[in-house]
Image 1: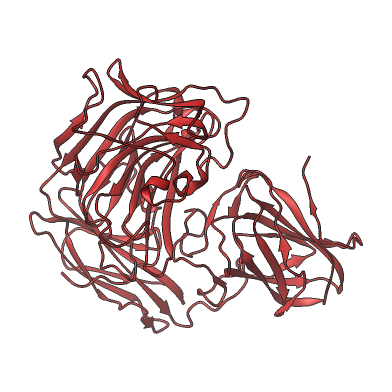
Image 2: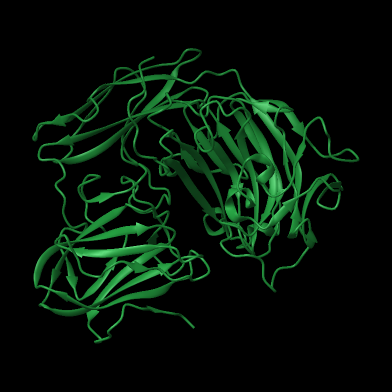
Length: 538
């Protein structure tokens, strides 16, 4: 098998083309806990205790969580064929809440397979229940370098969506995350996914992972490339299962309040692990080469070598980013693609007769490539609104700079590394904002004059800083983002009486400190205010 080509885009949207797929692998049950006994089986589960400091993690388990985890029967027990994890509001060892966090580490550890549980989630504001996987030995370094797989997480009261994710990273300290959601509306259930039991599943293969709710596929992941680790690391080592309810912290974004009712319970009917002896396909993209430029006027000829060590290739799929552009079922696995001049991410996915997959990706340009420019083809008009996600198109370091290579929010512009997510005010916003990042917008200022520039921001803690440059000149000064109490609660941060020249120009939004979300930037005729002050919502 050939060496791993550089993969730089997470194609979550492949799930859309696989929505009717059912795994053909012959999975066999290798372990389960049905919770039919009188208590929690110590051969299966270990309780993790305290607030995180016992494990070399900052208090709050690295997430500013509020609970103290215990092994007491008040926080975890078996009842009516269910494991019950129970969060309580009580004073205990300096904390105002208790809960339980259980794991199978060094008792039941697994490499690959179908891992699932039937769970009824709690439904209270400020809670963060989870069913997830962690490495048993941190072979590639501290978190997140050795990986994390979240099979199901939900936050806050009456969750109308659940989420999965993978975390990985590099020795440079760069964290990578792919996070994805399935909503009750997409799923076709009642708006409260905590109203009943659901089966949450991950199929973990060497080159692909798939997430399901009640057997319905909603996400596919195959890109966890990190420059420090050969693919498919770090998810090629033993992992173990965790179940817990956290209280407060970075997930919910806000602690429980007077609307929250305790005790709060997560019911786990069973946890099961299936495995198969099937081996994934072998795959190599023969052409085009990564970073190759294809002359204008010629087809992009995609040639692939694919084989299966213990079966046969069912099909080879060809994608332009997340869009299927062709499919071949028999060799030679070749596609001639009539693409206009531009820059492209081409992914090839080989699937065997047991529904195991292997994906390779290359980035190419054709003809003149992709020069930077306004996202919608013409400059945004000033005065007017700049939606944060509509920054200029172009290459990283030319039109934008983000500290990781993937779109962690998995929304809108999946071919760029800027983190775009759904926004509570409608549309999209930018999240996971880190100091040193920047974005450019090509605008046309109707006439020279004095303008107010209003940033629509949200931040639980209010620690962010930003400024705006026109033509390389800082026009706003560094502004401090206010505390709004939640990532998705927004307020206005205004730079007043900014003098702008007329005509087309490129503006750059510069992040001086992170920890906030940005929905949009409004530029309006000046209200003649003298100070840069945030307008607090009432």
